[in-house]
Image 1 (cartoon, rainbow, N blue to C red):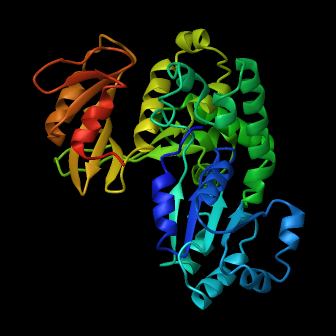
Image 2: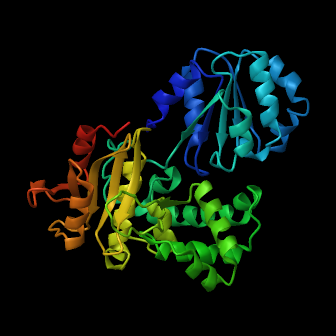
Image 3: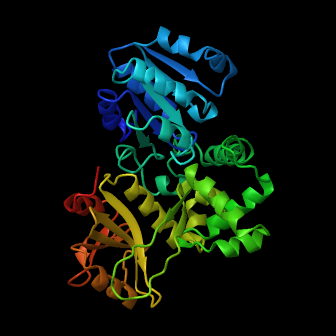
Length: 391
């Protein structure tokens, strides 16, 4: 069994808060996770999947049903399907406020679940579940490059053959485009959305210029921003923000865009095996996005990720800021013999981080110079732990 990073936080939150929400993309393992949590708790539980009519019908008189099970852990899966429930949940919690009353699962971020964020304020903790990260599956061999190639969605990562993983991913993308995004309120042509996802895959690790995408797809700027907002709030993409610091320089203000899951990225680009990945021009950016996803999935709440770039091309791939202070920077290189640009050196001087890493696939750690340490992606966890940024 693969134990998820959220387990401890979820169990602890259920011991003092009336509601906990586990959010993440579809098929990331939320349902399996919460059923395991429920089995470990010394109390009865009720599970309803709100995608199924039979389960929704049980809530025709929801106040009566909730009161009947007021001493049970109530698990509501795909809760974004019934947004009208949230005001009632608040009333039920206030009427009988005990820890661990509701465990909500959803495939949309709090921004898309704004009703719940406002209605249940002070009563709920939101936890994000990522696809399998490399620390969760460290006991499975071989993790690398299998995990990088296939990504962390359980059905794709654990598929017995590569072609099964591809079949699963094709169905996943089709379902998201044709059913899930419309269910979240995004009305868009499936063809246009598929084209947008393909463009974002080719932009992976690059600056996101909304106007270019709008022109290419022949839609308005506001429309393309709304589409990308939805994709981010559905946990499919990530916009990494630039770090702003008062260094008297002109800073780049556009975000960088990444497909969150490496397996999804490779599927959108038509990459089916490691040889295809090695030969593809996206390989460097794919490696960069893979490492950034693994890091962000393991950062504590006090730490925020950024990138840094100035108009004069001083740049660094990742800047970790804890409590408002830069604690670590990282350049991510798909090379075991990496080199730095002048822009990297200038960025290091601008940011004055106590640690500057160059993260490679397999290079043994060594000092490249007095300020930059080379390490591989397994050794990087020790430096991140020293910086105090890990959960």
